[in-house]
Image 1 (cartoon, rainbow, N blue to C red):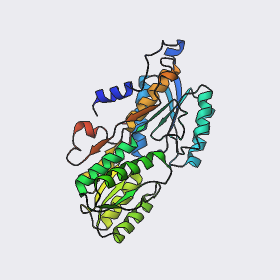
Image 2 (spheres, one colour):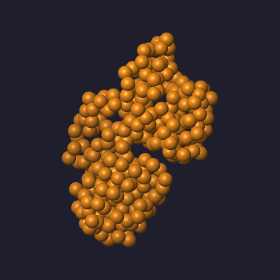
Image 3 (spheres, rainbow, N blue to C red):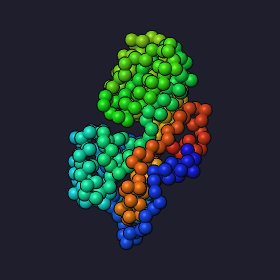
Image 4 (cartoon, rainbow, N blue to C red):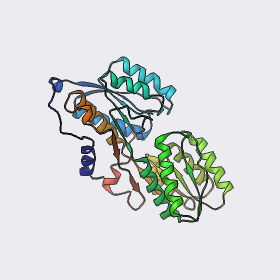
Length: 323
């Protein structure tokens, strides 16, 4: 993740030269950021990036969201933020369908919306910044084959059916792994939602029912916490290979301790930074909405114990504070 690569990727999001600056160039602009969750390292890292961009581009930024990934809990934060009449909105949609009409209405009112981390069902926002979830799933499948081999039984942990981002992480893995490893058995996908406890129970049951279980692939950090606990409780550390999305501090420690075997690390800091930057530039008229490519996919990195001490890779690990 060299800085030049990040800059090149962001440059591709702008499909035309910048327009002339508007008279509002020198004024502070207001952006409401509405993450899918607060209090977890992924979104803290995204907040750090958003705050850095707010400083760099003179943005009055608010950051409010629910403790759980739940549209019923996120909606009051959305309503409260819109009461303050922001000039732009940075949104993680916790329901890919329910928020389409609200985003469409904001765009119609001249308020640009950039979604981050998860997509909407319809591309009504100005830009969607997210990981390429399918390619990340493919990378996880390749990593699993390297650490666990190509025979035996494997299980995949999703979140809940119908989530386009998580489902893509699942299908990227299963498509790749089953195609390249015909002697492997991939069990039906397990769905613990965001409950670590439920994930632990499901993985424990899979271990008990499948003595030849060779690997567990987890698509998000909350379930990974439960999966790692189940593997430890069963005394299977190192025997059952664990590959997971995300890079929370505990996951990093557990990777070093041999509980995880590979991590698929996203770029939440860049999601926050690039989202606030492009909103500020649109609001000031430095770039027109029509000149912005809708899809802005950021790369993920596969991290193993052999590569985890590389300074460029360490810089992508998720944060618990912005200090």
